[in-house]
Every structure is written in structure tokens, then in C-alpha cells.
Image (cartoon, rainbow, N blue to C red):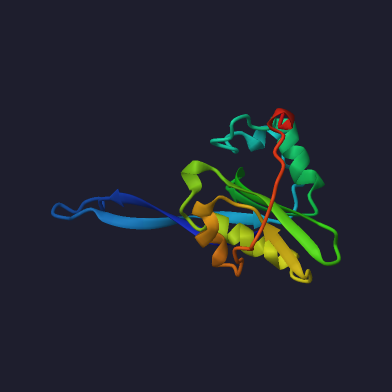
Length: 162
């Protein structure tokens, strides 16, 4: 795993024996690490994802989607899974990114961007990589070269999520 995303936390302390000292603030860095395999991930590691879904997939289905994807990128804060992205592909010309999930408390820290970068690196030989997203997320994906296409359609069977 590669640790290249940093989170900052602060601690203040006083130097022992110093009567007239101001607190010193020290910044420590917790490292978010990344992996390209779901090996070692368990169903319980996938709690907290799929926020806002009308009916979230079960833990077991979440693990299956990681294990059965053609490419994955995962983010860990220590031993805790905090984000993942998946892709399916024909391995020749086309790929599709169905999921990018980052736990709410870890959003806004660049984790999602790093996951997409890693996933696109794995799909680099493909002619096309598509993603379907809400309009509010178009600017996020545009940073990676995605463009809004003229048409797209989808079928959603909400009763089959679980």
C-alpha cells in the first residue's frame, strides 16, 4: 500500500519546567494508505457506506461487488476502510466506473480524487471509460477528463439492491 494522502491533527503541550512559556502546537500526520485489491476486507469493514441510498446493499453484497469487480482502488485510515472505487471492463476497449464511495467523515480530503486516479491508472489501456453520475458531481469527474456525453440511459431495479 502506498501512503500518499495526509491528514493533519494538532496537539498542544507545555515544556516542563518553563514558567512563562506559551503552548507549542505540533502537527502530526495520519497517513491514508491505498490498495488495489480487496484481499483481507470483510463485510464488517463496509459499514457506513452507501449513505443516502433508498435501500443500501447488504454488507455481503458490498464485499461481493469489491471482489467481483475487474479493478478496485481502496483507501484505508490505519486499518479502517474509508473509501473505495470499482470498475468493470471487457478488458479490451471499454470500462465503466459504477462506484465511488468515501465515508462522510473522510470526504473533502482528496481521498475520492486519489481513488479515481488509481482506478484510471488501472484502466489506462482502454479506449473508453464511462461513469454515470448526478449533475452535481460532473465537475468532480471533469477534472479527470470525463466529458458530458449526449445521451445515456439506465435501468434501476431498486428491489434488487439487497
